[in-house]
Image 1 (cartoon, helix red, strand yellow):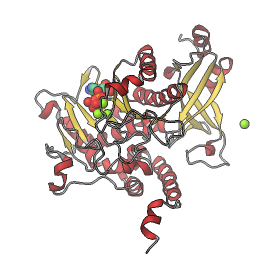
Image 2 (spheres, helix red, strand yellow; image 1 turned 180 degrees about the vertical axis):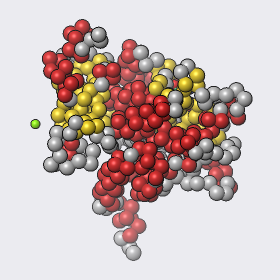
Image 3 (cartoon, protein in one colour; image 1 turned 180 degrees about the horizontal axis):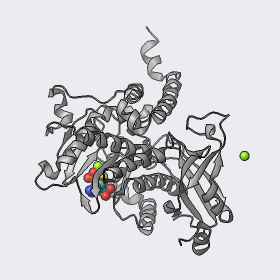
Image 4 (cartoon, helix red, strand yellow; image 1 turned 90 degrees about the horizontal axis):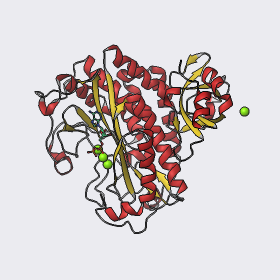
Length: 433
Ligand code: ADP
Ligand code: MG
Ligand code: MG
Ligand code: MG
Ligand code: MG
C-alpha cells in the first residue's frame, strides 16, 4: 500500500500543503491546508468558488472541488515545510470539462488509445526586473548583444543557482543556465519528460522562479514582451512521441532523422497552428512578441509565419535533431497544460488525417520571408487568434466544444477590456485628426 499524504508529511516534515490548480488564464490558485487535513482533501477535494477565478463559471454555481494528485507532490525547496500538489477540478461529482489539466489529460488519453505517449521539454524564458516591474533589475546589463553575457549571468549567480540547485534536488535533471538575448533575460533548462509531468513542472517552475526572485528582492516575469525594443520571452516546446522506449519520431532513414509519422504530426501542427495560437500566445501582449520588428540584439527569435525548417531558428518549427520538433511559437504567458494540449491535439489530428507538412524551407525567414509566396501568417493580434480558435472544428472536437467556448468567451472579455483602454499611441496619432 502506498503511503498516505499525511504519512509522507510526517516522514518529510511537511506542515502544510498547497492544493493548487491553474485556471484558464494559467493563474495558479491554491488553498493552504494543514497536514492533518490533507487525507480528507485527497478524498473530497478542497472547496473553491469557481466564479472567483478564470474558469467561466457563475456566482450561483455550486462548490468547485480541487482534488490533489498525490503523484504531483513537490516539497518547496525554498520552504520545505510546504508541499505543493497539482489538483484536478470537479463540480457536481463530475470532472470540469474546461479545467486545463483535464483538457491535457484528455489529449494524453487520446494519444494512449493509439499507443503513443508525448514527451516534451519547455524552455521558459523570463526577465528579472525591479519590484515595480518597470525596468530590468540590473542597471549594468546594457549590452546590445547580451546573449550568454557571462558577467551579467554571474551577477545573478545567487538567484540562478538557488533555482538550479532546487531542480537538481527535485531530480528534474537541469543541465544549463544562461543569460538570454534580451537585457535582464534568463533561461534555465531541464530534461524533457511525459507531457503531464512537464506541464506540472512548468507550472511549478514559474512559481519557483517568482518566489526565489522575490526572496532576493527582485521580481521575475514571464510576460511575453515586457520591453518593446528587446527580445521577448518565448516558451519553446520540444516534442516527440513514444511507444514504450522507442521514439517513433526517430527514423535514421527519414529526412533530417524524422519518421513518416513525425511528419504527419508536424503536418497537423502546421495546419492548426493559427488555431492554437490563442492557447500558445494567449495575451494581448503576446502579439508584440510575434510579428515584431527587429529587436536591438538584431533578431526577435520569434516567428511571424507558419513554416518549418532544419536547424535554423528563424522558423516556427525547427528540427534541431533527429526524432523531435522544436515548436518556437509559444510564449511565457501560455498556460502550461493548454500549451501541451494544443500541440498534442494538433499533432494527433495530423496523424489521423495523414497530414502533409509540405517541403521545409531552408531560408533565413527574417531576411527572406517576404520572398516566399503562399506562406500562411500567424494571427496579428489576440482577437484574430481567438476568432480562428473558436472557429476550429478540429479543436472543438479534440479539446471539447465546452472548453473552446469557455476559453473563447473569457478571452473575448479580455480583448474587450483592452479595447476600453485609451492608449498613448491614439493620442499621439489622432489628436490632430
Ligand atoms: P535550444 O535552446 O537549442 O532550443 P534547449 O537545450 O534550451 O534547446 O532546450 C531543449 C529542450 O528539449 C530540453 O528541455 C530538452 O530536454 C528537450 N528535448 C530534448 N530531446 C527531446 C525529445 N526527444 N523530446 C522532447 N524534448 C526533448
Ligand atoms: Mg469561505
Ligand atoms: Mg534554449
Ligand atoms: Mg531561449
Ligand atoms: Mg529553443
